[in-house]
Structure formats: C-alpha cells, structure tokens
Length: 130
Image (tube, rainbow, N blue to C red; front, side, top):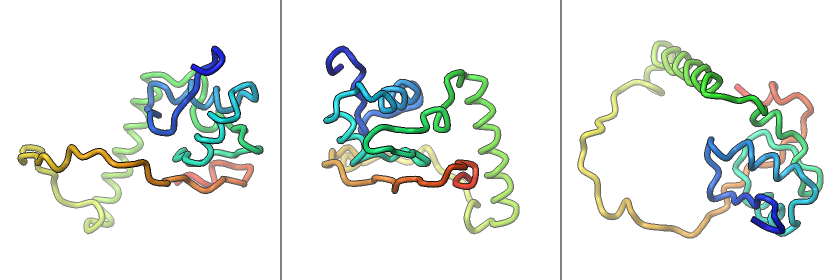
C-alpha cells in the first residue's frame, strides 16, 4: 500500500491480483514511483500507456472475469495445443515427465531482469493477440 492505495509490483502479478493491479496502474492517483517501477518492468502484453498510466485495463482483464471465464480460457488453450500437436507435432509433441527428481540448483533466487514487453500502440488489441 502506498498512500492507502494498492501498490502493485511487477514481481508479484498473478491471476488473482491481475485486475487489482491493472486498476491501480490506470489510476492517476497511484504514486508515480509505483507506476514508474511497473512501467519499466511490465511484462503485461497488450498494455497501452499514456505516460506512466495504463490506458486499457479492461482489455487486459475485464471487471467481471470469473472462474467460468478462466475455464473458458483454459479450454481455448487446450484447443490450440491439440491443433498444434496435430499440425505441428515438432512444436508441441511429446510428453512431460512430472516424476523426475528436482535439483537444489532450481531453488536459486536471481535479481530481476528486464522482461519488459514493448508498448502496445495499436487501438485494436485483437490484432495483437493470437
């Protein structure tokens, strides 16, 4: 929280806080330092910014996004995966063995790298999305 407002971090965006994050980023009252940090490190595809204020929060996740919406999105992803496996098997074929042993080196913590997605400048987000 910053000045009583939600202060999102680009390091902690997950589905359960995505709507709250984009609403905060679209609010000009959100502290400039918070907006600046998020803008400089944002990994949200399709984000349109006016200065450091997010212009299109509803394009990213609409206000009434629900578990039903999430299930529908997963179904679409499954359809895409099935299509790719049938038509481009080298891209999507094979299985994943979830029973392999882990390794302690997988637990390393790293400094944040810049994974920022370039600004989206088009007006029609559907042209941007697959």
